[in-house]
Image (tube, rainbow, N blue to C red; front, side, top):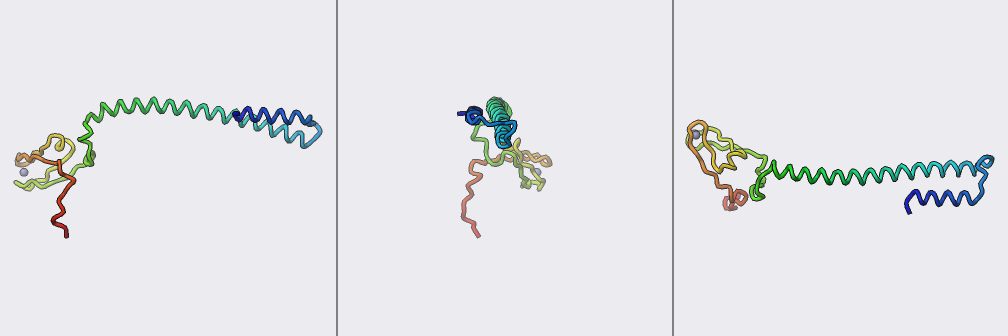
Length: 136
Ligand SMILES: [Zn+2]
C-alpha cells in the first residue's frame, strides 16, 4: 500500500465511527489530523516522484559526462598514473638550470633544458619501484 492508500483506509475507518466532527472535539481533532495526513501523503509522493526523475536525469548527465571525459582525457589507462596533475623540478646536469618536468614533458618522454639546450630522455617505467638498498 502506498501512503495515500493507507491514509484513505484510515479515513474510511474514521468515517465508520460516525464521529461528530462539528460538536465533538475528539471527532474534530481526528478529522483535522486525517486532513493533514492526506496532504503529507501527497507531498511525500510528489517528492518521491521528483527524486526518481532527478535520479534518471543524473544518470543521463553522468553518461554524457563520461562521453566528455573520453574526449578530454584521451589517454590510455596505462598513462594515468599518479603524476597526472603533478610536476616537479630537476637540475640540469649540464648547466644547473631548473628543468620543469610537467605532463607535457612526461608525454614527450624527454625534457629540453631552456638554457643550454641539452635534452634528457626520461624513463619513468620503474618510477614507483625504487630499490631499497640505501635505507638509513
Ligand atoms: Zn642546461
